Image (cartoon, rainbow, N blue to C red; front, top):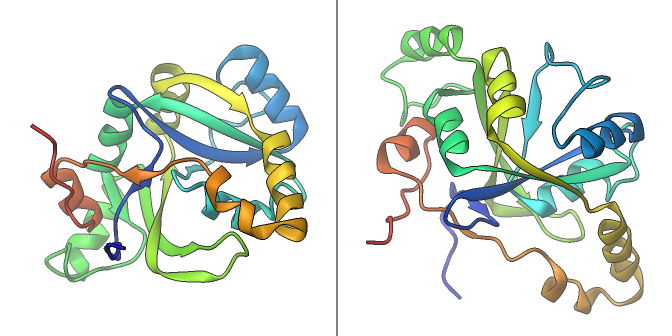
Length: 204
């Protein structure tokens, strides 16, 4: 098995779109599903975090059991929008491999409406793995672009999540084959540098 680079974006994607995950209370989820995008009671003025990793979303939401995270949504957005967000982002923490110095990072953070975090990826049981998982925080105009321009479709996958959660207790060996097929996402080199990721060559 090939070793996964420490910072690699892995996701379900096709030629035009990529799937990210969010978990919300029923009121926000139902309104979003009815509208095909996020509408009130979702609040545009708050930062919203999108996650390409299904298992990290499961870890964060407790497999859709934590308060206000009872519904898990698979949000399909344009790859162009996803890459636009990453290109405009700033890491949540100073990283010498990305920024010239702390002052350069502070300036970038002040100017950017997008935050990127690399947190340990998780197993189905929630244990941390050596490589990292990408979280992207959108605020300000980036939230509006996400809601009004980038979202192509929203699916409620809560029933699937509950089924897999049950299998973890009754037949854990069956779970890996049923997880979404996430593959290394081919980031443009300049975008990979912006978020401190290991570049994945773009197929010719």
